[in-house]
Amino acid sequence: MVKKKRLRLIAEMARKIRAYRELKSRPRESQKYALDYETMRRPLTGKMLPVLAWQDVRRESRLFSLLAGMRLFGVGRLFTRKSWLEEHTEPSYWQVTKIKVDYTSENMDHGRAWGVLTYKGKQESEVKEMDKVMYHDWRLVPKHIEQQFKDFEPLPEPPVRYVHYPPLLRAMLLSQHHEAGGGAVAEEPVLPLRRDVLLNKDYFRSQEQERQRRAGTAV
Image (cartoon, rainbow, N blue to C red; front, top):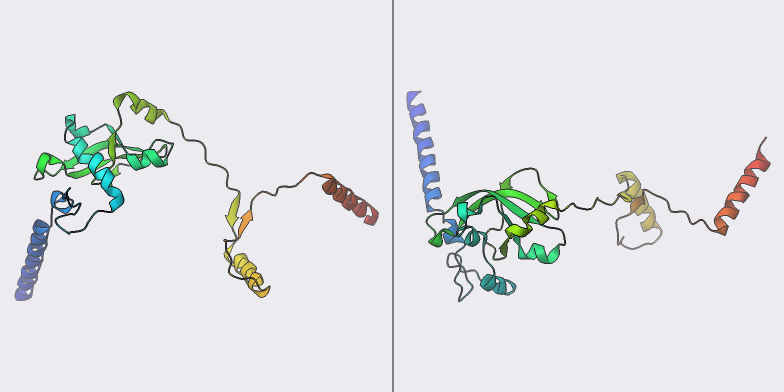
């Protein structure tokens, strides 16, 4: 019994040692995302960046390239991305709350960062790790327009006008469509939540005829 327990302890210790060695041998952020700006390849993997990214790599900055030159590493400041500025009219940005710098990297321009995301004017409630910090399209929001970003109020969501059919009714509709000789359905069938009625002469005439018919059949 004692021997089995000792063997289990030895196996557990060996597992922890292997896990520790794997962790120590894992490349750091500065090694993983290092870039040769002449060949546009990452030395660690040999992969070349997409051609469309070359212009941003030469003109724009990574997040930690901006943070490294700032007081308190930019904690509390707002950062946005070139792609967000081009794609959205609503403000999208991160407010940095915490960073973890890779001090082994040259110029301390690699690491991990956390913050609160506001995307298309809608602020999230929880702090989470910022993604794509190695992308070359980060920009610092100037102090004099930070309040404009924060004061933006998104427009209310438009009311839902269509919903999907219940599964059984959807299956019946698709079955009728195929039995009628129809081909593949191009769009998913949806059920309108509001019925638009055209108030023209034909509509009022049909309503009057229906009223007279009901009055003539009343007992």
